[in-house]
Length: 412
Image (cartoon, rainbow, N blue to C red; front, side, top):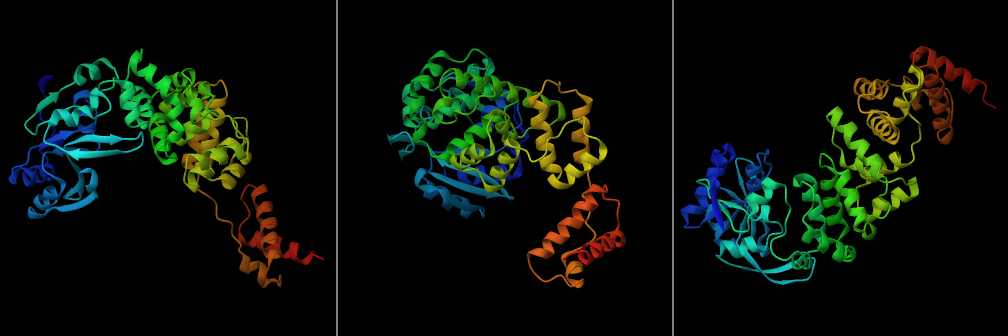
């Protein structure tokens, strides 16, 4: 075990953070920062959530927080986790634990006051770090050296860690994509390859979260390719074969300052709409996410830089700016144009500046001309709208009403 110090970070001494620390320590509890905030502080990255660990039992944590006037939410109290809310910011406070029983999906835990035992149940050495409020780092398994070397290494035996929770297999690839430097740890990779057949045990929700986090990495294609080569994808996403298109998508997005994991998933999946819908269901994507994935898999409109101005505006109107941008980027990644291509960039710029024209007539206008309530109202309205779109949206309300009157008057 090695100890190091870290320079005090603003988030460590923020008033809302100090309020939580002081509340726990006032009752005699020992408390340290753990998890991603420590890892990312050591790596010099921006932190997101602030997680804490303590030797106080969860019921005692609730008492101490409430005594200090802080909100305490028992989010996972059976597993020792209480969410403290200080000045509107949530802090997950988890009691030190060790595993009593595991089945590959969940663990039965017992509380402890042994910091190293708690660290030993973590997945990777870089995630087993803990940080005292005064800046002293505790590193029981060489996580700092691993983090600085870009080495994603399991705590202890990789096979055992994965057997305890199969999700750790996907987490290995996700962390390797975000923190790793080639080559991957051979022991970890061997365990992932040999235990990939266990992946179907996982809930689709847990798989979706890990997959999208992996795809959010700056350069995910190399790691997804590694997963394919090691046979891992075969067990949960066998259709993910367009590694080159994913690579181009990530490069294009990086050049544009974008990062959309769902769009990267679409680039990775060379499938039709029905298959995309089936995969979306299997991954438990939301309805909005499923609709996006299906639209990108089998576009209603083919978008290319060769489109003239009216054709672009027609497509933008029918698709909407967001879907237009999705289809542009997927088509761009599907070709050979590089991320600096002016034609494709122009299409993206149009989606940002696009203001959706408002069709100037409504169903009420149709009914005022004597068209009976029912399907014919919508059909008539769509006919006029199509004429208006084909005219590049130039006709105003007066011209559209005249077109409507002529259409209704000529109806049998």
